[in-house]
Image (cartoon, rainbow, N blue to C red; front, side):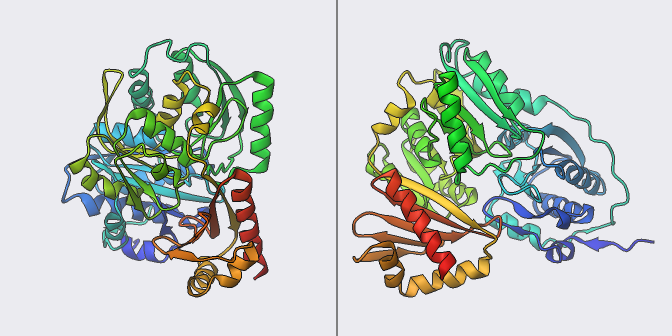
Length: 471
């Protein structure tokens, strides 16, 4: 007879950890029992706060995601918890529907990280879990039996339809009439939603490069290949914009009419301005043009990760009418209900790719004209793959204590200040910024830079990562 397992012990021994958003790890470590342990611990950690008998599930297009969803469902069945399965849909679509129905949900996705890894994102009935909730999951001692079977999950399209209706109801049927939009579909979880939505609003839509193989698009580190593709697509088709997302559809990637991809924080800044947002919560890595623009009454800077952005909303909501947040990756979080086109758009405090893109596409001005009106602050970012968190911490501790040699390597001989709210952020007197931090989702070192031109910002990133690899 099988011996009962304890969720906290199974989780502690599997090597999977919580990152900036969700639990992430190698696919081989997400065994059926590990998936069940996380699902059961999540439900048990919130059952004293909420009353529910069903948990919603959805997945991205990774080869491993469906089996992980099956394991979560089988684990929850041991608690007499039913599941509703929404298939392959964007994370914000799942979160929105589950919040409407006052039920918890679990999204099986590794977001932008390579397909040999995967993850789990958890949502309470009132929204995305906090860092305190993460700790509660890790330390929950729920007993359960090892999994011995799996069952077919029947797909419901209710979440997909609710997500489409959320945005279709905001605009007239001809709101995008005359606009030519390309959709870089690759393996995005929302690729079957975006085209129908944009066409229902009057746009002429062209599907681009759908892939049957999972493509790990990182909206903070767009490849040179994808940059060139966008320019060529725009030139060939005469697009007004190109739209794409990361793997689970919560981070947008938008190109202007010239095929130039916008930085995620610039997209968030423009969206917030156009929505009339009063107060923002944004991570420390975002472009300082947000403050320099003068568009907002208050800007709160946080650690990197949507839980930290969301944590700021309760304070901001007490003092300001329209509250939102976004990340450098472009994911947009609406912290409070707002009025848009005489319709109430309800809060959605989790990363969303559609809202900032739609708001931008509705404008008569060309996207490049809107960006040119912003302060001249340009950011760039990239990453070193297969760079352990331990090595990242050693590097940042060295630079925190004395960054003079590092800065002279970059060509700076001037005063600087250091911010350690999340990683190591070095601000030069001239206004340039270099920011290093270990990824919360993978063994990678991320580098962000800001300067007075795009070329200088990119050069800062390249030279910083060269320094790291040489030293």
